[in-house]
Length: 219
Ligand SMILES: O=C(CO)[C@@H](O)[C@H](O)COP(=O)(O)O
Ligand SMILES: [Co+2]
Image (cartoon, rainbow, N blue to C red):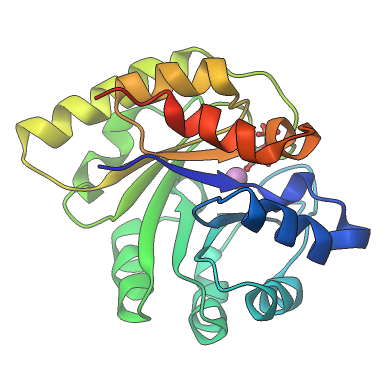
């Protein structure tokens, strides 16, 4: 599977959002990652559906929504109407993950399951035949600019092994503390969707950084 780079707009300048979207498009990113935080599931509030609707009008790139909210069910129908391409929600946030995966797909979107750093892979093994991707958090969710938690690499390897063993085709997304160094370890372990916030937005030459992130892939 091809490695893709997804800038997290949490690190964009919200006052100049359009400029930052265009800057990332010029840097040839593959899609945008949109972090929705509700102040309950995580101790931060980011932005919600109205902004996602505006972003949808502002770019033709695919949109990947990462729901860090309680009751993620309530947002799915509207996200489908907006025209979002991919939606992930946290296994820790719902008692009905399997039903929700089916619901997201029925609305025409790709469905992902996200895991906090403390959550073991066994919590989601029952979903691996149904999800399109698994999002491994390599920071505690809620904020950009944190350091990568190394234990995430073993989780990516574990998922990769299950994927080969069971002949499944879900992708592995990694989110939190991704830079050229950590990206290489994640790609080597089996991740193909790389979310990057502070590293990409701080860069003077974002295009070079995107290539560096993607270019680590040797296999
Ligand atoms: O979901 C989250 C944070 O909860 C992420 O998507 C971050 O926004 C990634 O930012 P960096 O760690 O790359 O700065
Ligand atoms: Co995220």
